[in-house]
Structures are given as C-alpha cells and as structure tokens.
Length: 130
Image (cartoon, rainbow, N blue to C red):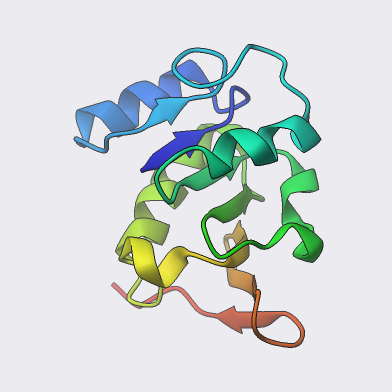
C-alpha cells in the first residue's frame, strides 16, 4: 500500500492516478488532516505494510525505521514528486513491497540514500540508466 503525505501537491497526486498508481492520502483517506509526524507512526502500523512518501525531511530519521513500513523523503521539487515516486517504485532495489519494508529512504535527483533497519549507516544507490 502506498500512502502520500498531505504535503504532496494535488496536481502530483492527479498525475500518479493518470499513471494508474494506487495510493491513499493522509488527511483524506487515512488519519486526520494535520496529524503530527510522530502521530503518523501508529497510523502506519495499522495499515498493511505501507510505503509512505512525504516532502517533509522529518521522515528521514533512521530511528523511525520499522520492519512493517517504509518511509520515503522526497528531497525533490514539489512539481517533480510524482515522477520520483514512479522512478522509485520501478527501481530494481525497491520495486516490491517486501524490498521496501524496514527502510528509511531519501530520494533526490542524484540517487537514493537509504537506511536499512538491520544495517549500519546510510547506503546509496544510483538511478538506473534509461
């Protein structure tokens, strides 16, 4: 299950829907609008292995890694959020729900940084070449 933070612009959500990417949105489908970052953790645990995408840097905290969800910080321009979400979901290292679980991820134009719950330190991978 994919979950988008309420800070992902409506236009980017529309683009994802056009690409047939299914997701839920905080404040619309899941939780109350304005739910604090810390209060989203229990909400995510009540969902079925969610991958949560946010433009908020707070979600890049390694201490928040959990085996039952994935947190993704979109460190990109707001108008590029949908494209980077789609690229991430197609990346060979993260293209299944099971591959994503337990990770805290930072997506940026230069690649992907991630912290695995069971590893030491940040790791990086490049975007695949087209």
